[in-house]
Image (cartoon, rainbow, N blue to C red):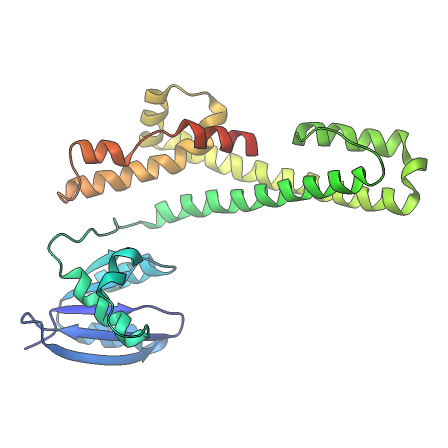
Length: 270
């Protein structure tokens, strides 16, 4: 009998395949390099392929589906209980194959390129915000060593540091003042890049109907829209689960809940 279920342990360059027939008998065990993977998968009859949710998983899902296969993406925590013996690529591929055959298994919704673009926007912006926060903390610490203290606010930092450089340069010293100038210049650059991400997110917010509907229902101000966009794509994922009968009723409502505390932290970070 041919392969009906195929578990693939994804990696950067080497991929482990584990295939079983409808009776659960092992009919395929193979280790392939990245350049040969699609070629070998294309030779197989259409089957159900299981992969773990990880970096690159949605790319491979699209590629395998283009070859006519059905692809199921599984969260790693749902695969782990089915792993036997020590952890290695071969056992992981077998565990994935076993996990996806469970009748009550939950699968990760498919993620489109547009959804991944939105995710990349938010991750890129958050990276810059983290760098900016760390930079402000470092400048405050350096200035405390010289006897200058001011509040935690980034807005206050933007106001106080130029004032100190203009009025207290002699107390700071030429070398130290030059260091603070360079760090403050970096802060301005980070501000500029964060604004670019904000503009791109705003464009997505304005042209996406789902974002508009959710923002209208929540009734929040424009400055909260950064959080709205990512939550819109979570909402779209819930809709896909509903379409496949995997999530409905109260469970669907619970999967999409507005979190005021998290929103407050996001706003403070900005």
